[in-house]
Length: 245
Length: 338
Image 1 (cartoon, rainbow over the protein chains, first blue to last red):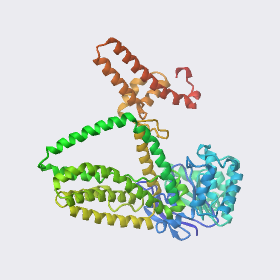
Image 2: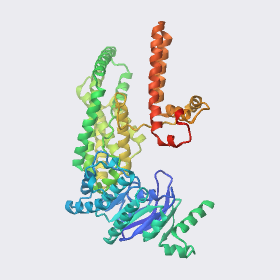
Image 3: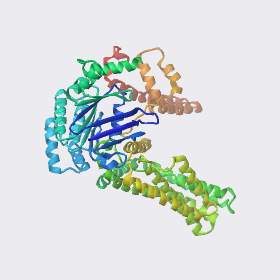
Image 4: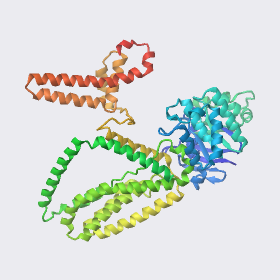
């Protein structure tokens, strides 16, 4: 069991945004966190990476509880935010060096991994540049390289598909696959449903702060009695149903 | 992480020095010298009238002492990207925070030291005995340290023992004891300091660091600093915040009239921008006053022309960003109108 979320209720202020979330992400698995804008995807993610404190419930990663051993928990995790945040005064190379220091990586191995990723994303010739001035897609790629050069046990990715070019999306999915094979768990939030449908092993459907369903597409098709429906159809029917209530 | 702190502290230091050069320009230093001298003279004269010390003297001493325990914003030097890049280093964040704490404690000694120095003659008048005066000053210094420690506790999810109102109350009660028992106040304050120090240490060892709260606090502090510097020179990374200014909605309507999109946009920008509108109003008032109270025609003419010119020059700052926004080129409006 990599990531285990039990009865998580939380939010930014006193009013909870997400209510009683129960979710597990196993090793070698990519779980898609699906939901509309404001459904609670980012809030859930902020709890998982420890930027927020749960009002109720526990979160643990490989049996290390976030509330009990926050430092050990966070050392196992890498995060790619939706909006890239970079240091204005660091070059791309210095960002990578900082990541190596932050995760205590072996320099040789880490640089080898990083160079492979940089080649893939066509950034290898920009090591001396300041990524803060890059376009959104390129900054996103820098965040991806910094996260995936680590040997984290859990990768948390917040909406990676917006702003990336098709080639980069394909490369990203390839890298995620690789990490899965090495036994890492991946939690990814998105509302690009057709891509999610193809690549995620399981899905967690969030709506208005509540987890509506967790499972594979096959599970959903049986559960909602719609054997040919796509993820898109199923999610839309749930979301629209809620709106009419 | 200590290395990172050192690096950031160095950059921060040189940045502050760069701006201080503009702040402490010759004119200001000269003005401050005269101002400080005058104030010192007035203070000295006032002290002479206080012999013997009237009843309110001790209350005044206690109030000033209490205020002196309050300065000391933590200098964290954290950046927006830190929660993402440094999260995995949370086990070492305490090493970073300890460096930051040391720096904050040292820098808090400057205002507290100057304040105590100024207070010293008053204290001598009030207590007559040196060891009592030392007790008061110790209480103030320890109190300011305690407040700093409590602020650092707030950067952990578990937070401080009490909310800030109760903390202030305890601080006030202990400081008010100096009126009768300065030494007891100092001892109590020391006890409190030790308690809060222990709590902070426990948090640093086991607590969960609230990255977002710490980064937000640091951004706010830097924002205040930059805004202060911007009174003297242009600051390049000062975020300009629009203010809603609901009370000025009527003014927007008046300025915009019924005319084009541009006058609507410009008037909203002038009214709600960080400082543009207030700058124009200040210019206008100064100009009006001079024109109103002068009886020399040529001076009125000159000042009137200059004021108008300066206000119009300010409008360039409104015009440029609108032109730079590509939507303006796309909208089906006549760009000539801009």
